[in-house]
Image (cartoon, rainbow, N blue to C red):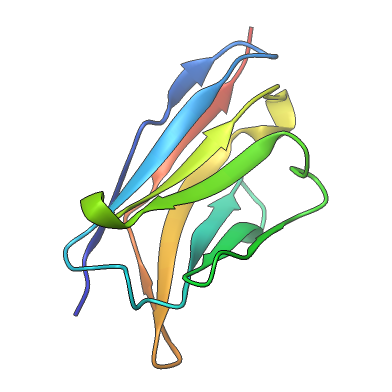
Length: 115
């Protein structure tokens, strides 16, 4: 089964940027759906963005225009570029991959937006 490892989280000031990476243990070329969720303290996990292997991308309204999801098939990696970060973006960010209707998850990376 595929293993997913996130990286790139950290502490950033409001208005700043971070790029999260999700490295897969196998080729992502044929993985139709990959993306990101996040979970803030005391809240349910929230969908953030999704990318398909046909080039489509989708975003939650809360991040549209600020976040960009992309894939690098040569590196088996999915990225989440986050710009204009707000304190409400603070959460643990999880990468996922959907393979044959089963979801695989990474361990998460913490993003904290604070001055």
